[in-house]
Length: 223
Image (cartoon, rainbow, N blue to C red):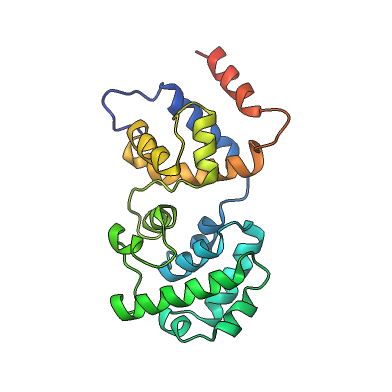
């Protein structure tokens, strides 16, 4: 159950009402890949980190099984740091940019072993210093694994937030900052969980009919 911590805002605010309506609709849709992994394996930092890096420009249906394969074969940063590039790249061959991702995963694992004792750090600055890790990956790890309030802004979150008029931004970083101002902190983790399936299954970029406008019109009629 969510509640607003912003004294200047009430739960009758349009963006909160719309958020709750979206939450009800996505409850019956497949959850984001990382959420599924956390539910199946628990908040395992290395698995989530590997899966997130694999997910770049890839569908969840491809990312999920490959992330599990990599984790089964290389369950720790140390094992992946000493992995054969040929073996790893062949293992993840079905995914796009598999050669680049294999090199990144090995470099990343080496850094984790050498600088962090084989553990995935939860500090934002430390995460952002890792090879291949940007704000999206860092925030997803902090939110889904470590339970730290953070907004993971991917292409769906960025597009849907602008589509609804919650923000008027050009970059994911700008969107993250504006959403942090708009929503109280206890909503931050859920934003990605709700807007990702909304963008994947309900409000597609090239859809001929926009169901979002119908939803907003119905909400306006209830005022």
